[in-house]
Image: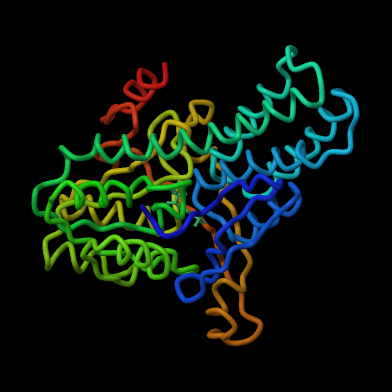
Length: 347
Ligand code: MRU
C-alpha cells in the first residue's frame, strides 16, 4: 500500500491529484472541481502516465455531471459533449485518454438513463469502475510477468510507470514491484528520463518507498550497463500499442530498445489492454506530442542552454515491433508476430 494516491474522488465533488511536478521533495495535493481544470492539469502534467490520464478524464467528466446546473437530460448531454471535447484535447498520444472518454460516452448515451439524476449516478459509477479496474489490471500484469523474470535479475526501466502513472500499482514498474514482493532478487536501473526526469524523480521515489533496490542512471548509460554489467531484461510501459505491435512510449524508449537488441537483452512492454489501439495500424499513425522548449532549455527555473536556440522536444517516440520480445498484458503475454497475437488477444 502506498502512502500516496495519484488521483481520488472526494464526495463533495472534488478530484484530488498529487502534483507530480513537485515530487519527490514536496507532497502537494491539488483539488479540482471542473473538467477544464482537469484538462489543464493533464496538459501541465500534474497527473501523467497513460492509465492515470484516462482515469483523470473519466473523473473530469464526473465533475461536470456533479456540478451541473442543467435541468434536462439533453442539456446535460450537450454540456458533457463539450467537456469530453476539452478533455480529449489535453494530450494526444496516450490512447487511454480516448478510450476512457469513449467508455464514458457509451454510458452517457445509454437511453435508459432518462433523467439528470440517473445520469449523474451512472457517470460517477462508471468513473469509479475505470479507476478500480485499473488497479486490478495492473496487479494481473505483474503476476503475468513473473515467469519472465529470473530469480536474480538486473532490469532497466524507462520513465515512470508505477502507482503515480496509474490509479495504483503500475504497469512496468508494477512488474518489478511484483517480482520483488514475490521474493525475487531484482535490481532496477532507472533511466532518469530527460527532460522531465520521471525516472530520477518519480520511479526512484516509488521504489525507495517500496524498498526495491535500484540505482538511477542517465538515459545514455543503458548501453554501457548492458555491455559491462550484464542486464537481464528491459521493461517499459507504453502510451499506445498499434495493431502491428509498434509502441509509442516516452522519448528514449526506441534508443533503449535498439541497444537492448544489439546486446541480446529481452525487451518487454507492459501494458493494460486499454492501451492497445487496434484502430491504429502501425506506429507512424500515432500522433507524437511536441512539448514546450522550456522543458529542455530549463531544469526547473534554471536555464541551461544559451538564449534564442532551437529545441526539439517530442515527448514520445515509436519503437518498432521488431525490437519487442513480448507485450505483457492483464490477459496474458503476447509474442511476435504481433499482428496475429494482438488480434487474437483483443477479440
Ligand atoms: O509524458 P508522461 O510522463 O505521461 O509519459 C509516460 C510514459 O511514457 C509511460 O511510460 C506510459 O504512459 C505508460 S504509464 C503506465
